[in-house]
Image (cartoon, rainbow, N blue to C red; front, side):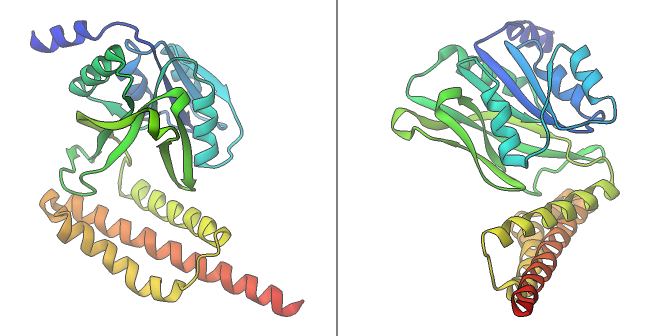
Length: 273
């Protein structure tokens, strides 16, 4: 009964659009849209070329699907943000879904429309192989709810970051509850994701002229494992937490291995000239 009352209390359109980027996310996109479709003025899904049922699922659930060729995480999310028109924008990945408590907090924040606040952070928590990871990568606060005209996407691929561009006109506050993150379906997708992110980060590091990759290759992977297992207490999440911590260190290893390759390939080209 209490859950039904909460659902009915937030079953109302508010001055908020939802921006989502997607590509071949048929396994998670439905949960994401279902979680907020009763709340948003518009749900905009920017798709970069799905070949599965992602677009069909999104449109069937009432979202607006827009094709936009992939330009990287930062530019893709900025494009989605710029397609929104409401005062407030909730930016979600296609594998994220707010729980009911967070939905209630989002509703209250948007309806209150405090002129002193430009954005709200929320804690993203991973749900992996049937269990919550209550320690691994926790806490992971992300700025997700913003005034449309006060925010922009920045960072470097694949580490995008939503920031407030008019800090003098508003502060950032935190909302309670959890933003569910269904990052990986199994260990294979976990490893593919971490390695892919590492390789993409290497390309960005190379463009930014980052150096000292051999030192980083020796230090960063074990430091990442130590941070998750010991400092973040990932071992308390059992074997799931340990596997994710190990995969994170593998992703960092891939990043610096690829960066070494890029630097030496570039140096070899210079010597040939």
